[in-house]
Image (cartoon, rainbow, N blue to C red; front, side, top):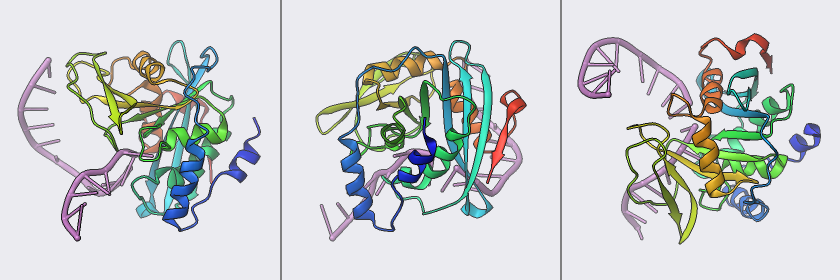
Amino acid sequence: MDWKSVIESAPVWSGNVAKARAVQSELAACVSLVDDYPPLRVIAGVDVGFEDNGTITRAAAVLLDASTLVPIAQVVARLPTCMPYIPGLLSFRELPAVLQALSELPQVPDMVFVDGQGIAHPRGLGIAAHLGVITGLPAIGVAKTILVGSHGAVGERRGDRAELVYQGRVIGTVLRSKDRVKPLIVSPGYRVSVAGAAELVLAGCTRYRLPEATRWADRVASRRGGSSPSLFGRETE
DNA sequence: GCGACAG
DNA sequence: ATCTTGTCGC
């Protein structure tokens, strides 16, 4: 995997909203929803947090053993924040730091769990889909709230779900990952189908609402501890 | 024109 | 995302 070129060729925030949206539409056409990911040996969770009043973007990437869901390694990348949060353009704000962190993991993951939407986005390119298209890595978007789309009732038990529909298309799954908790919004990022993404996320959730991969990345990005992956951690700036 | 709006 | 204590529920 040539991270150097991936990071260099990644779309950069130009300060032009219309232009950024146009880029998203182009990349959205490259999204593959075919379940062609390899057997999952190692998976990764990525998430972002901020420091110094938001001036520093802190991205965390945690590698986990796919069969045991136990953390193997963690990396933190800190970069100057490049733009403010603009609904629909989250990837331009967070991907630079996320890609840097991912590139420093000791191994390339077979699947990346991203905090945010996959194709469940106004132009079909949430941060998980964006990450997948430019890295080529299979990815899934796991969000805590809806950006676009609507759905019917969701049962109260773990595994219960409802289709997330937007403009007549099924773009994701509103999935109850644990009994009686607010459901997750799961959508394909890249090289995964709507159904496949939901199954992988459910399998990745053990005793908490969020998948283990996302949970660890969350913790590391928000610089909380929760001892475990911290044994082989690195840091960058 | 008036809301809604991932993190 | 982030600022923040106690508190309701399993």
